[in-house]
Image (tube, rainbow, N blue to C red; front, side, top):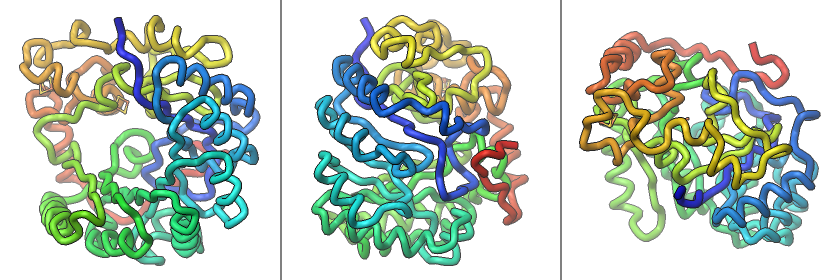
Length: 359
Ligand code: SF4
Ligand code: FES
């Protein structure tokens, strides 16, 4: 028996006006013409709810780039799912906000690239984006919806972490996610420019601890030590095929948002396969469930049901072997790759994500 997934990540589109150099979308972006239709998404939401999912994250790319985002939100709500919009905020205006609230939107997670305009616009690659985000935050709060700010942090903005906390308070967020970059896809291509130093990380940890104490009861701050400075990996996705289900813009049903980067696995598509069948029976979902697939040192390790061997996408990106122990673990024979990357990091130039031009 496989437990039900808790949440569905609905990647509605890969289209996005921003060009963040750490984007978690695949290097090969799905064309608009290949995207699931409104009716197909509605069926996916019904299947997700029937399977046991409680919430849906409406994500992308930029989900509000879909002209049918209001209908999609209404369909998710009609299926009985708690709806969270994960947005860059730059396409959100008062009219759209009002229609999303009427459609039953429950929560908004707004990304922020840096604490100040110049830094944010350089990182996101879009002029005017920072001011638009401030306006979007105000619209969300005026609509009475809870707001989470998601700050992806790295070598080129960690010095502004205190100011990012101030921005979260100023914009009325109840929660701030301080999310270190995960290095696969675009972020791996920009790793030298994004990897923080150990000193930056130690400063960040001090800033987070102080801010948590200072703003207790007003702002919750989520923060996890990044893999490249860790000695044990995280349970990526809570373990492969254990908690989480994603559907890509073109309908591929995935155990994690980066799974399409893995060669050798074929993912079922929501146009042909139900979510229930994909979740329970597909070889891709079953490939790394449990512990039977694990190599040493994971196989004999006491943490094998704590972190489930770490991240498959990171293991594949760094070693070429999707079944390898995540190199974030100091017991991995490949752990030195991470230390070498930290020592090699430096430079400021980004390679920006560009829709319609993957290479
Ligand atoms: Fe986790 Fe495997 Fe490392 Fe043990 S050896 S801590 S199971 S990644
Ligand atoms: Fe795919 Fe970690 S991101 S398993």
